[in-house]
Length: 291
Image (tube, rainbow, N blue to C red; front, top):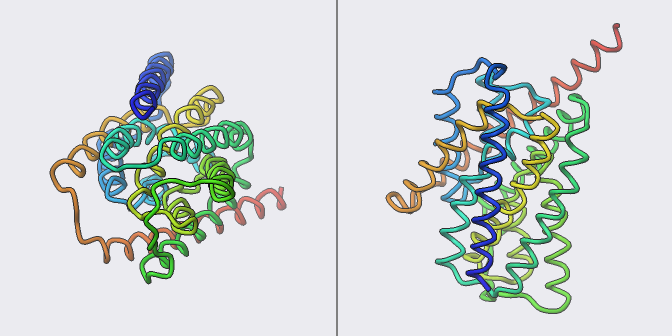
């Protein structure tokens, strides 16, 4: 069953890569004039630390805004498109090395994917101000969850590698919601870890579940954003390529780092970015009111 899951993931990833490359090629004469070097640096760093469990959405959001790589309105789409292939590579690695009960894994991944497909269609049509508010709040929630994890308030002590009964139903519903929220720019890692811990599963199984969920949901969600032209084409393509390099180095060479102070740095960046995002939404409201 796990082999079949990996084959499906491989097919999805190849189809997504083809869809992305064809869209970029079709618009090759109208790509955004942004630095490929900066985009590559963002992709390498964020997916390197993503592989180690930091999460990529919040840091990428902060770096995209700090370097002015794209407009706020296309950040949710850019996040889902630009990390789709690196996260698929992560999922291949962790699904094979960490044991999870197959039915539990497949149902949770399917729930997240369906949630993302529904959520992407909704988010891609939202105005920039609404996206700024949603992402600002999402970043604040992510920051709080990271702080709780750093202090050990959210910490897993379970040993289960699968779910049954009401816990399985709760896990499916929870991951469906997280999949939908991810299309708005809410990183799935921290809340998915919290969900896994709450349901009494082993902390280790959070990695294949959260990475597998992201791998399966980001591709259909990313295709919807591509169809709606709500993403930064050049930036997304470069981040995908550089991100894969970061994943391989983190997984097979570095493997583990002391991340305590890095997590605090990420929290600080997240809170700063959330504040500026919410302030930007208020400024755009004020400008419209004056008009």
